[in-house]
Amino acid sequence: MTAALSLDLPSLAERLRKAHATTRPLMLDIIGHACRRIPSLGDSERTARLTRLIDVGAWADAALVVMELELPMWQVRRIAYDDGEWHCALSRERELPDWLDAAVEARHADLALALLSAFVEVRALTADASRPSVPSVRPMLDPLYEPVACDHFG
Image (tube, rainbow, N blue to C red; front, top):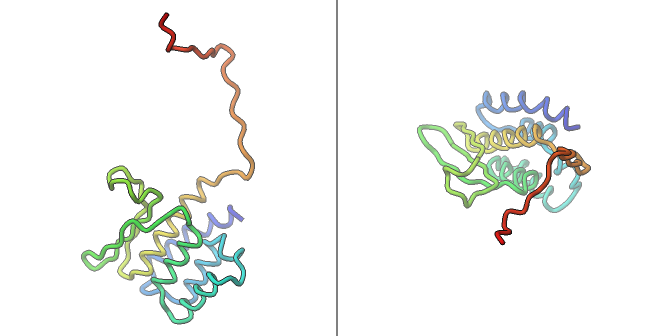
């Protein structure tokens, strides 16, 4: 599923860039193509809340719930409106100064689309760096390698 997921993300990101407003079909496509956790949650209270938000067209709130459910290690670092566009930054280390943080940023004239664009960017970033389900084995050390204790001065 990861390979199919990563193939859909660039086209999904392009659709978000070209969209003028969030729609129900677009939101359902994002959930269907970029979300791994939401389908596995089934009919829970959290998915029911998301469904209610989508039903009433509360797109920015729905986007925030999608990010909360799908990216629990990521947080919104910044949402700002400047020169006709919403700027959204997501971060794993929100408490770090801006210059140290590797935040993922996106922008769009529509707030919900800016949030969803940042979400898709993070999803693409994490799909590229997907981890195996089993631990990896450390490579063998060079046979000539020998650790040396440097703290013995006597």
